[in-house]
Length: 170
Image (cartoon, rainbow, N blue to C red; front, top):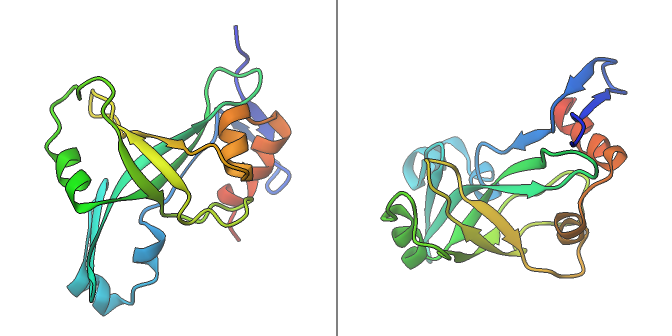
């Protein structure tokens, strides 16, 4: 049986229990808009986002990148945004629950994760799940620390090192 993940935070001294789950409220592209642009060009919901621009429209879905933690049953979860093509964005929205087996969509990673080299535009597969769960993200296996961590998992020390700055951004 896997142990419960817990660590004593070096930032606040508190005991944090449970595998870390760090989420982004919007894609990086949305964060770069000013207030007027957000009101006139973008639509942001809890799980979907669109942004209009001169070249057309960008489409984003919120998904989960689940990274195993060595010796623990629950993964480190990054709640991230993935850019999809217009066609795949529409197909995703029209999916039945549960989705057809093997359903997936190519996408581009659309957040910058602290503790990693540049993560914007890493190649991904978005894999829908049923039961109103956010889809999970599979990164293309490439020579990048995030891809390596997703494939090989995190040590407890690495999971703590990633979680602490996200839990205490100031």
